[in-house]
Image (cartoon, rainbow, N blue to C red; front, side):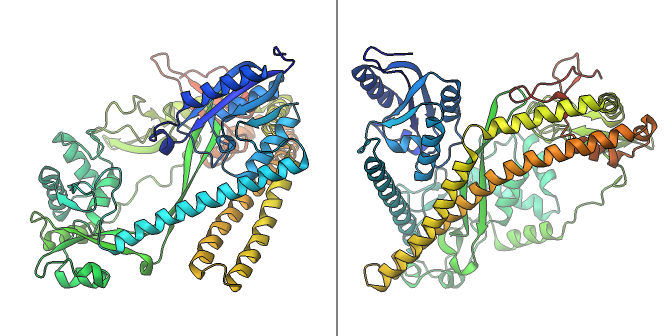
Length: 563
């Protein structure tokens, strides 16, 4: 598709992260408007405008970027335009991957702030500027983190999006004051726990009393209740105990004889990244994967907050002792072999758990969505499913499909083709090379930083900060390199599994399948990557995915078995 000056078609791409959305003057509309003017001036025909609102540039797993890559793979795109280079990605290695992937389809990647051209010198210039920009962002982030920790060491509270339950921020947003309406609820929670009630009983009580949760809904999460009970912000500490936890300058602001709660900072280190996975409706689903690492107690920083008169220390300690002394009741029916455990998924997306009830001396086994509880009715409408009704239906369907060796071959071939399709979005060898180069660069920069510190050009504190950032980059590159290698190994494993299963099932008699135990049936489901989802509505039925309903693009369900 050719524009008025002989150029081809262009895809316009705009991205803004959640933090950037809060700033004025840097919006999606502003980016797209600048790109339209550039495309018009250069004679490009705009094929599509793609935006990624609220998406971080630290990952390529973004809905908008996936759309751009699909458009490029389909052909007919001459250039992908963005306002700034960091709109595509904040990691220079990702620029390399995208450029190589787009070049395979005859597509260029352009930003309005490019400084170089297509020559090796131009690419080197842009690469150096990318590295400098990344270094400056890392320095800003490190200065921000250290500034917050310095504020905490001074005994001040670091304001978050919402204050802790039972408190409100001061006008300067560097301290907390007790909020009596919510603190009265906290008192009830501790009183119930001191009486020996567990988190589930407290959860049910709060729901039935129509007490709003910290999120504003009627549904209290048990993790929220446990967090309140074990949080030192609600436990009164004496003046002496509090002063011992603070720095000397922060302790000067304490009032002798007064009690304080403690809010801890720097207890964990969290790293988040967005990942995508195939959805059952053919669309990709995106979720954030967070890695949390606990820090040693020596790194924790305490900040004092006012203690509430509603929470005497003996009440808090009694509630904690009762919670610690509770043991999970002995689970009944552990010997039952749940055939669909880890296979049955609710239509809301969660794996369905197992539940057993008894009536008249008889046990009834169910698969139940975790969101389906009597105090959360309406959160998920999926009713519990009797195990003795669904398990035979799914096994009959599976048995009939698995008796045909050709059906097994077709299913595995489709899965293998799907894996190859995912890999074909970029050159696996080029991706592996890029991440290997990134690992080597981290090793080279580590030595350079150490040389600079030895020469007096960098302080020890700056060296530690830079080495920590390098270590994070190295770990990210190693994970990405492992993912590329794992994808190739998965295809080889699927090919080997296909041939082995065809041979094994060709020798198997029908009665052999019928005599399998529940645990063995579960193993067979997982081997064939079977997943089952109940269909909504009164008609019932189940949707199945896996080898026997392998994808054209992502996933195509077979004809649904009936209930």
